Length: 317
Ligand SMILES: NC(=O)c1ccc[n+]([C@@H]2O[C@H](COP(=O)([O-])OP(=O)(O)OC[C@H]3O[C@@H](n4cnc5c(N)ncnc54)[C@H](O)[C@@H]3O)[C@@H](O)[C@H]2O)c1
Image 1 (tube, rainbow, N blue to C red):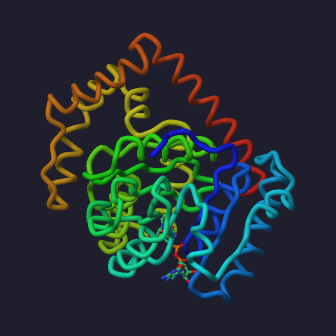
Image 2 (cartoon, rainbow, N blue to C red):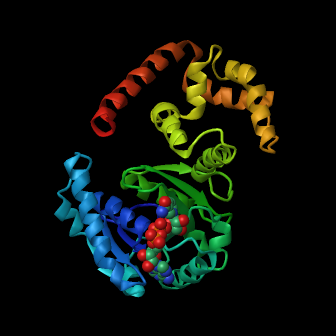
């Protein structure tokens, strides 16, 4: 396999539901050719309508360069799996989250796809070593997990299996970058990867709080949307804690760590922020932002939140 990308990569999208159709938008908007396959041919016209509507919206917001019809002209629907795979540089499987169904289909895809073609699954939870262990040429296979929808959430988790070749990872990352996605490497295969583990932590606690009558689902949505979320739209949780607390992330962990450990213990979790762990995070934070630049960064963060608040007035008030 070569890590060089062709001038116009040919993408075979398998499954034309929510995610497959959204991938079609991402790749067609990036100038790639797309074959969109679904086992249910009746789904294809609706998928094309959806892709056209989203491309028009993105163009109206100035978020894509090409005219929507030019991008649509690069998407070819097909109800024939082999036809979708002929000449493909990359396959992106997005069928329902059913391990056996995916394993069956991925084996068929690997038998047909050319040797130099990367094969990825959009699976939300299943580790690639469990999805691809049985397929031909498994060194070209990995998980590329998007958020929903990938034409708005521009990060994609890159999850190699134990048997994925380094060239496959490099090529997949180059393809994603070409498609204006930010590839983020997941270093260990854990169920749910990183995106859904973080999302799950928030949802688990939210359900507990509703169950225990502490608050309502509506008020949790307001606290996240107007509270936590507005800051998290411009900083991650570690940067946020680092900017908020005197003494940075280490000061935050010293002061707040014991309280958070008690909340975790209440939910049956015993994962304290040990000094070693905090030091590891602090090392990354200080490499990203020296201690004496935190105030300037916090002022930047506040102005970024102001920009978002101004934009949200149009849609939320
Ligand atoms: N929806 C999300 O929020 C989200 C986000 C990230 C990743 N994912 C993952 O993406 C994958 C697809 O999810 P979705 O939400 O798009 O599902 P979906 O149900 O919207 O679409 C699945 C599509 O696959 C088709 N299909 C079923 N069996 C097939 C087969 N054998 N060959 C070809 N097509 C087949 C169906 O007809 C359907 O159109 C799942 O693995 C899911 O976990 C979903």
